[in-house]
Length: 194
Image (tube, rainbow, N blue to C red):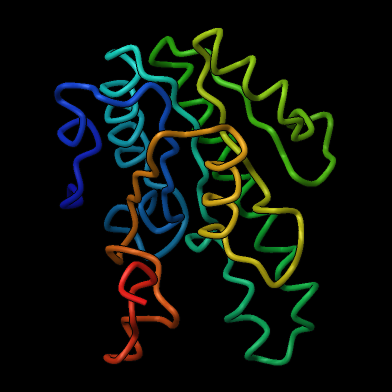
């Protein structure tokens, strides 16, 4: 099924020069219970293409919850730091899959990782990321912030500030950033309300 968020529809008449798109790992699952749906990743690539074709510079942060969720594993007794590192690796898997889908659409894409893995991704270097954006490449920031105890939403906000993005577009199950999980806590407050 197609999710109810439409990236291209948000920017029919671009007023932004540079955007950061935050995708949840779950956005890549489609109707599957886990993993990456080939149909969904093609759909997401098409949506990103619709932004890119408007001449907008696009950076992406993608989560890893479709593969591994560190905080959930830590609740079952796994060391939180180890679990979060596994979650970071899941974001790298999603980033490489998204890079492949975008490049099949003819979009030059670079994955930059906050943890070193030179055979798979470039290291995150701010000036290099900005230069890629200026050259018309999509940049996917993988491995979150590179630190345990931080979510990919935090990484998205941090990278958006660092690259001077005009806006963050969030393609996730929840409609904002909350002080706790709004799917579990009906009193969760969105940060812009605080």
